[in-house]
Image (cartoon, rainbow, N blue to C red; front, side):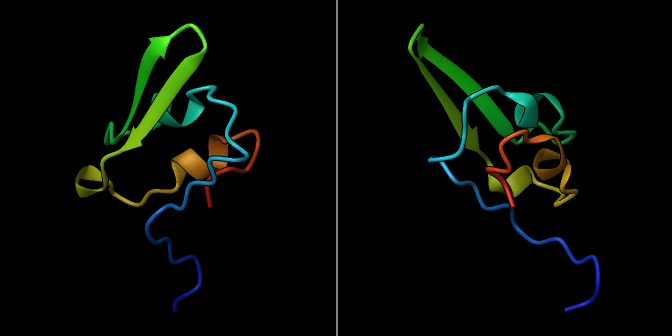
Amino acid sequence: MPEGFRGRPVFDAEKCVGCGGCANNCSARCILVFDVCQELRILQYVGRRCTYCGRCAEVCPEKAIT
């Protein structure tokens, strides 16, 4: 693989704290946040719109996205 190649992001739900930083910084708006209730937040990745820029992984404070 070429140096600097970015593929599909991989999410680790165990590390995710649900801050939503990835969704806020996604230029393609392919990470969606749904607040089901005060205790439950769901993040959904819509891969068909992803440009594989890597911004979501760069801003994740817990390194839950690689």
